[in-house]
Length: 113
Length: 109
Image 1 (cartoon, rainbow over the protein chains, first blue to last red):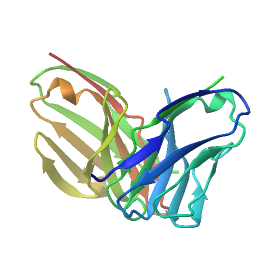
Image 2: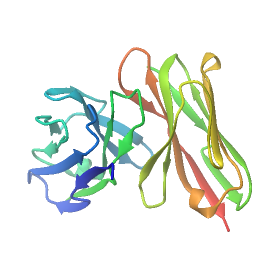
Image 3: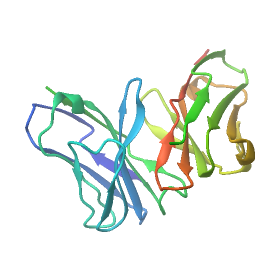
């Protein structure tokens, strides 16, 4: 089954404790992206990747890191999480950039205390 | 930058009713997509429609690129249609998707 898988789905952590949210797709997609969704602010792009070893900042990259060492994986790293990073996070992928159907993971709800 | 406006912001309908959701954008785009976010948070791609008309069951969409708008039609609404509908456009000058704020649809049984 074609899918985008995120883990963990739910996480409660404390300020400053490094964490990684994994994202994996099994569709051989070149394009992958991370979004955060906050009430009243809609979906905002954090980082995106056009292909392996190619990553770019989105609208709200501060406080986040990403890497794309393999085509299928695109982890989101919070080196020192802060409460303002409490949010619902989505990973997405598409065959090539945004010029095609965008598939989303089920979301990861992160709470930073 | 490009602006994406969706209307109405909220819509409450009885089961069986039809509805039209609108997405206006302020500049030329490479593509436009419609998404549904169900009450459990899952985001599903409904249509990839830079221009023209597409239909999928009870849902159809039309994009008039020259006039910078897109419409999503939902016929014979069901309670499972409830959720938030987003449109997102890819600006001609970059690869980023710009999202509208969404239309929250509630279908009452």
